[in-house]
Every structure is written in structure tokens, then in C-alpha cells.
Image (cartoon, rainbow, N blue to C red; front, side, top):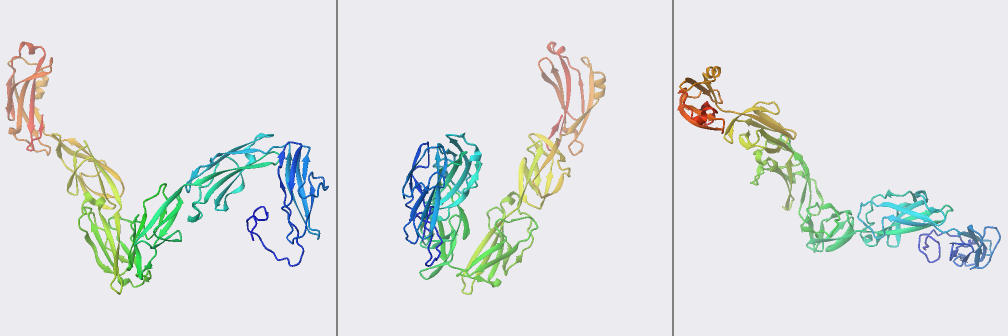
Length: 591
């Protein structure tokens, strides 16, 4: 038996049924009125005919319209005019003539208009995704009180589904301009197209007269297609079973689980091999804003299924780590297999060059296997792309077998290398690398870094210092992202001219003066450069136009010359320059 919130006959709702036997039951009283507010004189037509007696007895009516305690009418549908301003509680008493009675009241406001609430946000027709947050903003005006304060406003939010609703924000929630908690998920997939949120704002004036307004916000609906190979398999979505192909309707950002159990078709057991999105046999989907690509589950004849617990695909390794190999398996019917001897493990290493795997652990039976420690990277240039792959194979008594695998990647550390000046080479584990560069390698990797003397852009350089204070050749351990800078100085032969002191003490000369000079030089290692690698040049330099002319050149350790005659143009603005150039065995020169 159902009856709605009003209790009127024919309405829906949930009710208690109590056995009364032959006892007389009280009647039920209900009032309807064509108008409850207005200006005096206010005439209201009342109707009590919805009142009834559950025993079927004839009922009588007694009305008191103006709260004076006297019966104003005994009609079933009377009228009354309120001539004075005020708030009145019109009362109806119904009696069954056997001692049973019931009463009810209805509020009448004369010379008081109801307030007019308006919902500013959200607006009617707005849409939402799961998790969206609405800001509730409203206002209200009253004919007698003017603009109402926020304290006169209360909110309620209902989550509707078909013909019923659930409270989402309790009625009577006071305030204004505040955030509603995140929008809900659909009650279930069947409810996706028949659900919405009703935002209700109630305003109450100073005399207690209230008005409620409402806006409807709809969910953003998304369709998601599912199928299997072969088609016709069963999938489970959030606990509900579906036969493929099927389309599920839900809301944007709805998070739900999908899975595909082991099942029989045409007398053959099938097990899920893979989902088209790469997810596990049971995994979570988040509904996107637009219809996604179809989800397809690939099935195959059921075989034993090994599962690797450790290591996980999300794990990383460092130099010196060991792998703890742990797993389990189920047979073709999905039942656990307790015999660890049916499990066989292999671990292979890929050096990052996309070549064949190298054996790291040969085929080993059992469970909870511990490997040898992880070695250093084989090639620092490809260390970042290297990985280990763990294989677990299970073979049952009938010879059916299946292999699962997990790829484990390294925990990487980045080392930035540079030089001053930038662009020089550094040697890393015997490989020359031009700077600036970044090396990505494994955590705890130890390797050699060396700064060598070299020529760059025609200039020779020798190492001066490291930014970390280490020696020119250092053993580095990668344990944190870091930067190393090697500082270099120019490295060239240093020629020295003897006899310069005499010239400096007598900087002036006359035509015909004789000069005898000698020179020497050493290379960047400090070794003496031979006399044949020393070259002299005498120049007449003209300061007026910044030009010079070579007077004579000579090789050897000694150099003698006589001050020449200048031209008339050179005489006032020129001087003599003597240059000594030394060339080392590598062709590097210094002047």
C-alpha cells in the first residue's frame, strides 16, 4: 500500500500498516484552498473533501477560519472572507460520529505577499560532470520587507532518479554564495538518463511566509561501447553483468570498474587475454568528455595464468639491487595452483640498443627467488633506455602453459656536464663527449670522468679545475641530479726574448743601431722547444694607419738586425717591433 508525502488518496509513498481489529479508527483530515495569500478583503474557497474515514464512516466538518475558537462552517467546501490584515491558521476538524476525530490547519496571509527568490547560480539548464563544484548564489525580494538578507535564505539539493529522489544537500541549509560539494556519480547505469539535480532556494519573510524556487541541472551524458573477441562474452561493469556487444550510458568523469571473468562458450572455457586500452583484467575507467574508442576484450581458450607480484611494472632498480621474484598462478578454470614447482622464472637484460636480450637469470623453478645484484650499465650512452624483463611461465599437468612478463626500468640520475669555455670534450668511461651535455644513468652507478688537454677552435687548452674540487680524473657516483663544470685555461708555448731589458732601458734608436737578441720557449708540458721551431720577424709599424711592413724574418735561437731607414711618411709615426714565435710538435703556436 502506498501513499505520498501529502497523505492524499491515490498518491505514492511508503506507509506503515497496523492491524486494529474491530476498534474504531480515527478519520483523516485534509484541507485544500484556492488561495492562501492576498490583499484584504481576501476571499478563500476551502475544500475538505479529501478527508476520509478508514472505517468507511460518514464524516462531518467543523471549520474555524479566524482562530477565535468558534465553528464558522460545517460545510465540506465553504468559503470565507478575511477582512483584516494578518496571518491566520484556518482549522478543520472532521468527526466520524463514533468518537473518532482528526484536525488539520492551513496558513492564510492577508495583506502579506510572499517573497520572490531567484537562483543566480547555477542557472537552469546548466550541466555537470562527476566531481564538478557548483557555487550556490541567490537573492530574494519581498513586497513588504524589500531585499531579504542572506539569513532569510535556505537551500536544498535533490538528486532525482525516475520518480524518487535522494537528499544531496539537506533542506534548510542556511547561507548564500557557497560551494556545494562535488557533483555525484549516477546511482547506477540505468539511472544515467533519468537523473538530474534539483537546486531549491527558499526565502522566508519577516512574517514567516516562504516561497521556494528551483532550477534543474543535468549531467553530461557519455556513451561507451564494449565488445569482445569472440563477441557474445560476458563482462562485468561495476558489478553489473552485460553480454557484448553493449553500450553503457554514464556521466562524464564517472569512475567505474570493468572486468572479464573466465567463462564458458559452446562448451569451451575462455579467459581474457587483454583489453584494447591495455588495462588489467579488472581495471578502472574514467568516462571522458566525448565518446571514446570502443573497449574490446580479447579472449582465448583458457590456459593457466601466471601472475607476477614482485617486481611490479612501477618498480625501479639501482646498481646493486636484487630482484625478489614472487608470483602465483591459476589453472584454466581460474582456480589457484599451489605447487610452486610449476613456476619457472627468467630475467633478461636489454642494454637499450634494442638488441637481443642478455640472460641475467637462467630458467629457475620455484617462488620467492632472489637474483644476483644488478650490474653497472653496459653502455652509459644507452643507460636511460636499458631495462630488465622478468618472465614467469606456468605449465599445468596437461602440458598447457602460459607466460607473463614485467619490464622494470632503472631509477635514473641526470648529470649535466659543461666546460669553461663551453664546447670542449670530456672523457666519460673512455668515451669522448662534447659539452654541454646531460648524462642519464642509473642510481649508484660509478664511472670515470676525465678532463684532457685539447685544441678547440685553433686554440690549445689545459684543464685547470673541477667545480666539485676533485682531481682532473675523478671517480663519480650518480646519486642525485647534479652538474659538473671543468674549467680550462689556454695552453700554448711561451716564448721568451732575451735582451729585451737593454732595449727597454734605451727605447730610442737611430738608423744603423745594431741589436742582438736571443730567444727560447717551452711547450705546455714544460719541455724546451728546439731552435728550429723558433721564428723571428722584424716589423716597421705605422701608428697613423695601423699598418705594418715586414723588414726581415729569420729562424733560430739568435736574431741580429740593424735599425733600418724609414720612409719620409713613416719617420714621425712609426716604430720597430720584434716578434718571436714558437711552434710545438703538435703545431700549436705562441708569440
